[in-house]
Length: 328
Image (cartoon, rainbow, N blue to C red; front, side):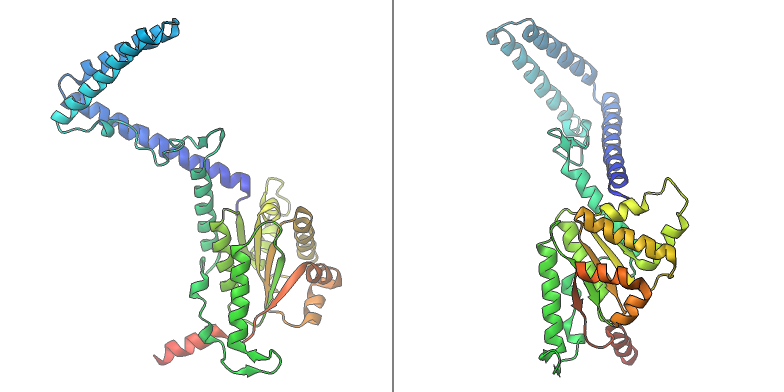
């Protein structure tokens, strides 16, 4: 898991590598063309000579009436070169670097700022990281099928579970589509197999598309890694989860409970609240008393007071799908 600075450096390296490859391919093509096209070397030398003369006239303060004709000669020489190449089956474009980004020409900088192509690579790298961290990969709201939820009236809800879950998923989709750094924290609660992780990853996909940085990790993975890096002063893991625009901390309750884990959890919770960074937590612990017993009253109170609770209802969708596949 990389922090924003590491992610940006890796993206810049990838863009720089694109430029290097484009320039190398163009240089190789130019060498081949020089060997295959008689008179090309002379045409290139003539363009350089005329270009130098035009630049010299302009630099010496000569008027446009003097340097403009010289510039026109450069244009004519380039046209002759294109015609020479075409006569031998070559295109002038083949001898120029084919940059991936037309804005920055793969330099990574456009109009004095980080080019959008670098930010696109950042998002792609984060997507890859999330896919590797989750067995579900990045999901979508379209793949969340409410037909797996019971279509029967629930007196407690006042509607059927299916209708209730359709409204829950629609509200999460709306959350994702309108996400910004002022968005609320969410606590997705419900028994196993009800689609909490699926929904959280669908939110992640939408938020990434909006250009925000998202980190997804399971509680088990995060806290075990923090424990492993406990005495590593060079580790940036805590900084990464603290500064992400959106952190999705999945499956609270699966991590090994220890005093150090609780300390890390409280640091993350407080740190992200202090920085104004939204977080989505998911847990299968539906009993508030058990949650408080596991995480202490202090942590449970801080978490509950800072989150909007979204309750998932229904039967284990994974189990229902498994049964359906088994009878197919």
